[in-house]
Image (cartoon, rainbow, N blue to C red; front, side, top):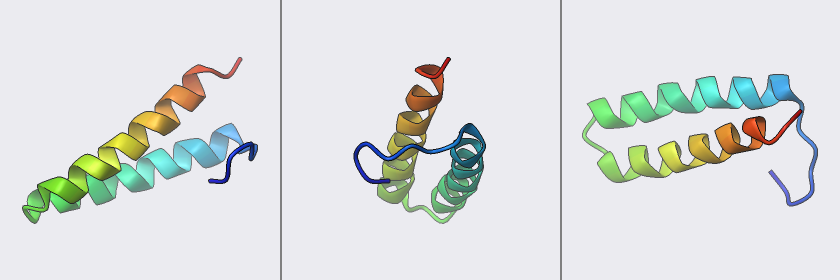
Length: 53
């Protein structure tokens, strides 16, 4: 997502769902570094949702 780009709440929720599945798979495959990076991205999206009215 580019800086200043407006993303719909629905798109953010979809991204969180998809990234959560990827993080879970990475964790199961033993790719802990990848899983941690994906979790950071998820956290960013959650913070963005929390900042919305």
